[in-house]
Length: 260
Image: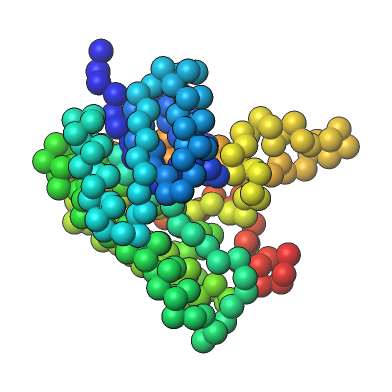
């Protein structure tokens, strides 16, 4: 039997990260689940997945915006599993308050850059050499709607600056690693509401009433997780350098500008 590939999911104790973990565990991957503060939720998820799927699930506490935490975590993962094949950079805090670029505090600016952009750099530095050595790897980051073509995002300037930096890094990695069997892609969810981040597609469909059966269902975390699972597969080796939009055909940024 082929040994399971190992996927690290950052920020996996809740939200979309939790649904990614569920989907990959059911698909047969071994999981290194990172959490920062939510230890109890992480433990509950690990127990759930181990019981239902019998997958090898290990937990790793660490703040991905701190380079020493990242290096320590990656070393532990490689020691525990013997290899690390897939990096899913899911953790990425977001300031929900509307703030003009000039009105961000210096602390808020540095927080957005550190947690969204610096963290990606630290993770790449720590994981890519081993992927190159084994000549196989998958790097997947999460972005936001229209990141590949927006000239700016009003009231979200710090987050947008950090995430567009990650998008550029993803495309750079795709070029630099094109001959190593390592792919790099970004998946960009639309407006997924808080509770729906951990929901399944079936549950979203069941919420449609008889009278609204032809309406579009709401987006869920499983929509994101299924695309990520596809990108992790061996046969997805030709897909690299892509920014994949998952907004369901809606203009999420325009809606945000209009206050919807």
